[in-house]
Length: 194
Image (cartoon, rainbow, N blue to C red):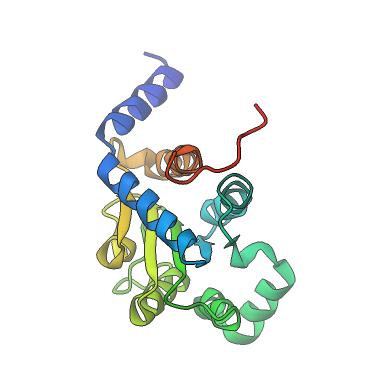
C-alpha cells in the first residue's frame, strides 16, 4: 500500500467512527442560535484560524447565520497580542463584540485546549467565559477533545487512527464536518451555485 492509499484508508476509518449524534447535536444548537438571533463566533489557531474564515463565509452565505472570525482582522490581532498578550486576544475581542448568552462559539482545534498544560489558552479562556455567561460551545477537535470537550454542548472528537497524523486528519475532517453542517437541512437556507 502506498502512502496515498494509506492516508485515504485512515480517513475512511475515521469517517466510519465519527460520532454522528454529536454532529446532529451541533446542527440543532446552531439552528436554535439562529432562531434566537444569536451570533456564531468561530475560533482556532493555525489551521483552525484559517478554517474559521472559510466557515464564516459558508454559514453566513448558505445558512443566514450571523457569523464572525475574530482573527480575520490582522491589525487588531497583532495590536492585541502586542499590548495584551496572546492568551486574551479572542476573549477581549469577544467582549468588545458584546458576546452574550444568545451566542455560540465554534472551536476548531487539534487538541481542544488544555488548561493544566497551558496549551491554547486563547481558546481555553474563551471556553471558560462562554460557560460562565451560558453561551453555547460547540467544536470539532482531535485527540481526547481537551477543554472544548470538557465544557462543550456539542463536540465532535475526530478519532485518532495514527498518532503521527493527528493534525492533518483532524484539520481535514473539520472541513468535511463544517461542510456537512452548512448542507444540513436543519441549517441550509440558500442553495450553493454548484
